[in-house]
Image (cartoon, rainbow, N blue to C red):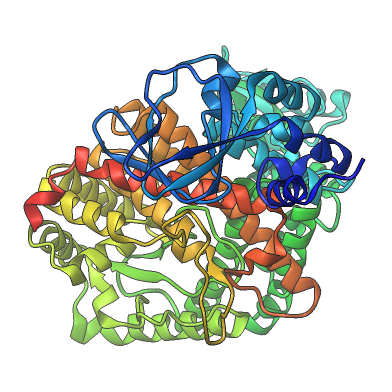
Length: 624
């Protein structure tokens, strides 16, 4: 029988709000007759903390707010807000008090009906699970919906490529014995061990160049011709990282070590077994590019690599590592080409990558962020022109490849970002000691730093100095905290999504500026405060939880919010690439499903909660 007009209006109302919008039409039709209506005057308690709900309340009109036991605002809600559902689902007491802040009508769904809907409809049930669990499921659902049958490139680990147990000889074995072992085992290299410890590797190329060509006696100890203390990798490392290491060192064999013991060897041939579409090959091709024009041609394949990653269901974290690794290969090759044209550097230097690439979190459409760290032997009048030319050649080359110059001029072409070690140390001391707004902005860029090219010892010295300075500077941390807490998420007073109302980005919101970057700043703040040696956002969050700076619950919430927003951005960028439009960070919420909109609001709510908790750890109020 058709519903009467009043019940039909309630059905249509429920159909436009989560989680009822996930119910089949026939089921939704049966709900309104079983509901009752309640009224709460402004200022009255709708549901008290510690009480045991016996029904799910849904705001029909008016507005409510949720406050914790300390009176802190947790959330405000308008029409469609569900009250008491999580407590009703778990049988736990209501965790917060809900007040009516306007005269409010609520629809009351009895517990029996509520539990029936939860048991029979998974999407309805998942809405009332713990927020972190909901976001984590949202991420998984995003990836499932975007995934095809192809295997993710990052599911190919080094361990996947190791096809046999390690073959080794003793360090005192003869070269002849090692060669016979290689021949019998039909392998192109043999590990050299002292007990269970790897001390070297001997390859077929070593036999040609160091034994036969050099006329070495085959009875000589293998230790005299092997490569001692070779570079190694771990079974859990992505194949992509292993290839990058082999390209950097110009080697064809890479020992695999697990818990200090040899576990096998991977070779360039092993890596060739991966699909040609994988970024492994793109990185290898870039490293062999003879000029910037070729690098640019190869880099044009990167957006389509990301398309494949999203289609394969790759996480935002893993996709970011792929894009970063390709970006690293591009930047390193452009630097190498520039240096080859200029000749040997007059003093040692380190090229530093900054920002999202430093954090291994690069997406499409990034600009350039980099700096030059020079040895203290640097003299501006004598050495300055060489490094100024290097900075310009690299920056211009990266621009040719497709990375626009930083609008804030945070690049090595800016003399302020091209300094010797002692000057950078002075900058760090100034930023930390007298943290002006400009200093905080510069520090926010420079404290996300990673070595890219040149002398790694210079970078290590500066990073250690940064870490010591930041951890012992509470006022500096308070300024960072104030900056992180001040960013506005695109979430309205009643948790509606706030979009731009005019201009080029009308009806869209910036998921990077409004969400991802704020989580990055929160993680950086807590990471620096606890002395974390990590630079990536998720690793800093883990360290912050371990140090007690974040609760495990909030740490998990932020991790899941970061992943949800990151994957949403990736999918949006891929959609633009597919239709030939440039990638950006501006998402139109109206193109998202109700499920995605709901979890987008939840992700922004997590960020607000984390911002609200910052003042508990840092003396933000003392700054005003």
